[in-house]
Length: 194
Length: 194
DNA sequence: CATTGTTTTCAATCATTTCTGAAATTCCGG
DNA sequence: CCGGAATTTCAGAAATGATTGAAAACAATG
Image (tube, rainbow over all chains, first blue to last red; front, side, top):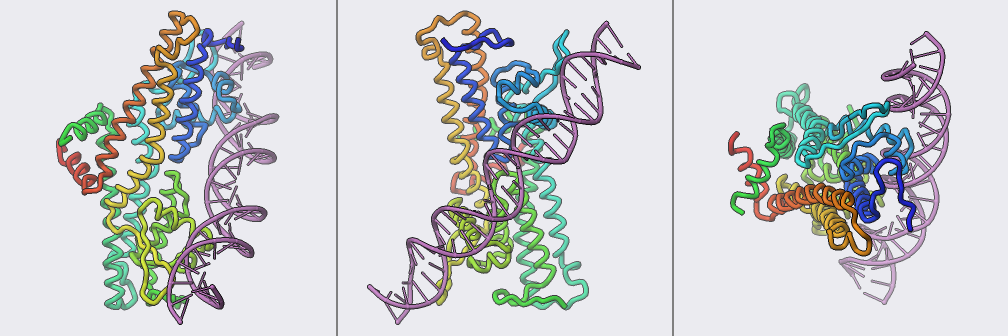
């Protein structure tokens, strides 16, 4: 009935194809909500759910995106460390494969987001904290009592946030550490008390 | 030297003002990276870091945003449950205050993101899983052996993802549960083995 | 080292999200 | 209820982010 014969995979059954498409859409949406470009998430979804190494043209065809877009999305996934290059003998094209292990995948994601967003934030918070450390805050001017109080309270709020993120950071490191810690962490957490 | 006399707070010292602005900027940026509108994050940052109840006009002035934007951002923060309304006697305006406790704040954020993004994803994954459960997959057509194999492997990948998110969900519930569990969880986690 | 096939880059375009501001609505005190 | 003050809504404008496509760079082959 349907036109169903792609050159690569030998005739994907319709249900499978449909399930893949739905998975890709769901994953793309989730990615978008978390600040990752929809297409990048979709490319990952495609590679993950098919489990097959794919080249740029296959990705373009399947996702209906341009060459440039495919190239950039794949590159970003490589940078995140959740997709890797492979080659096929006798083929000049590059093939891309998604990390198969779900826990590794999320360890990589956590590691990367920590590095890109949390660590810089912590650094900023430290800098901001320095602005109002009592020494530097009172350079030059006369600090009135109520101003001092205000600074004190400001510092308390800032410190609370800072120490939260430091905890988060340690937690993230623990989770993201290469050797199967993520799983262990979650297991411990759910196992206890539960 | 500088023009420094707002009507509300009795002359915020320059360093404090600067520290607040930097905090607001840092928080806005972080929010943006995680898929929250920059302004919404900034409004939260302002309310949190000043510790003061503020009305719409004060927020507008301080952040240089329109009334509409201020209104919508505040509303979103209320929906997230991390800002609450207050009133001042003899003043018809509404005042808004940020949750002061950092751990409560993040519990609320986790709760909300779980509800909005993770739970729907899990629901989708279940639906997709149903598409390829062996019964429904083979409705009508003859399932060739290799197709069967493909379906089987697809299901394995899907299930892996699904069970990761189920774990995450339980973890999230644990963390987000109202009574100080978040703190406990993190502490346990870091305390042990460390 | 020229040829051909492949990937990358990037300015221009397109799409989406965010923001504005004024009109509509709601809310109060009298 | 009325009048004014405050808030919300929402269509259009502005800003931001994503995508394209063609040209440049690169890589493998003979």
